[in-house]
Image 1: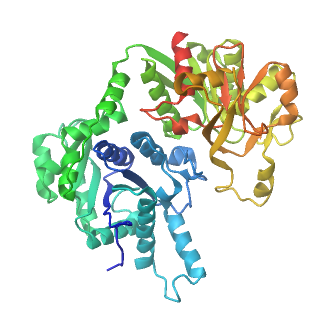
Image 2: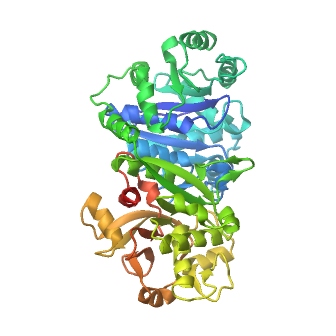
Amino acid sequence: MMDGSNTQGGGKTTRFIFVVGGVMSGIGKGVTAASIGRILSSRGFNVTAIKVDPYINVDAGTMNPIEHGEVFVTEDGDETDQDIGNYERFLNKNIYRVNYMTTGRVYQAVIQRERNLGYQGKCVQVVPHIPMEIRDRIQKAVDATKADIAVIEIGGTVGEYENILFLEAARYMKLEKPKDVLFVMVSYLPLPNKIGEMKTKPTQHAVRSLNSAGIQPDFIIARAEVDVDEPRRKKIALHCNMQRDDIISAPDIDSIYEVPLNFERDHLGDRILEKFNIEPKTGDLTNWQAMVNRLKSATQEVNIGIVGKYFATGDFCLSDSYVSVIESIKHACAVNDRQAKLSWLNTEEIEEQGVGILAQFDGIIVPQGWGSRGSEGKIKTIQYCRENKIPYFGLCYGMQMAVIEFARNVCGLEGANSGEVDPNTPHPVIHIMPEQKELLAKQQYGGTIRLGGWPCKLIKGTHLAKAYEKIRGEQEIVSERHRHRYEFNNDYREIMEEKGLVIAGTSPDGRIVEAIELANHPFFIGTQFHPEYISRPLDPHPLFVEFVRVCAKK
């Protein structure tokens, strides 16, 4: 058995809840983990959430967003899986680098320790040293957050080779402290149209696969199109060696923020605390319920188009590449008593078909992006918004494209572009940050861009500053998260300001342009930072709130 303890300084005992997947991926492990955290934090417990990705990648920063989904950036600059964003939104707190691990990160640490004689000459083996490293990393996250309860999501589904070592670490922890570790399996129950009956057999097989790893689930989250009925609930319990009350119904719903409320209908929080032998503390989900009610009660729509290029995957259109943007819009709509009607517009289609389709929208967002593909479609979109007074919100790359459009069509700088899109442009109005040149020359891409929270000085009197002031009061400096390698070229700052571009936010020393806007426009703001990373349902971001407010007026 491994050495280890899950007690912090002063003898405090931490409980651990591992969330694993069964049957298929993409059915809501991350939202389940976040919802369990929300429920327990509402009872007065200090909860932290940890994400385990089975990829060899050291972080999510170099992954294709179409294949992997959005890269979420933490306050301390880690490029992580999008589920970390869900944890922050549901727990309403920052989640840091120590709470994220990948197979690559774990192996990298073990190999480096071996090179430094950290194992004192022992033969370093996959088992037990990799599970030990995983266990130690979980404990470090607990120590850093002083958590009462840690919810650990293990990516993938049971039975996959990739996540077996993480399951092994979890099994060890259960062996060491059997009363302090619980397992939750999120499994899918199909309802085939031609059969007309919800099928439990795939879940039974998934539990058997988990059993083969030495783990018995304490709860099954029964994901399905509809509520799991009583016969199916009893059947799963019987065949999976569980209690009927530990089968938690999780039907399809309109908003992920309803999930904690649905779980509580089956008394999940009480059942968890009972199994941990913990007395429940005071607290409830009243604020959360009120927020969900606001999301659902609005009857008027606001029609927003998101113009990007990370939607298409074969014959399907996915929105996971921009999940934080989508959720930020929803948070802002709740404040403005509106329902969000979102449409996905591929930039390459706009390049081919023109901007006529944009006339139907109350507002347009151009989110983050990389490279040259689709850039001209974004520039055409921005020109249309500027000339037709359509509310426009540009996020990171969306700000850079707005600067290029203004340089070309207002300042007359023919061929203006970003050095990323066209290295030979005569007017590189967006250029690489000086400190990034050497990194690119050495092909040091992963984790080297400008990341995490950085201060932004708001220029008094601007639309940007007023938007923050409406929600948070007057502020001179705000902290916003970044993920970029290119920036506004200050060589062109004077000519652009002369032509009417407003520099609305800068770094405290004034060197880096953090936000631009147009004064004679209902809403035309571009930010080099990513406000979507810090918007939360109980604390919507001021810029999204103002954007939706203006769109609603239109």
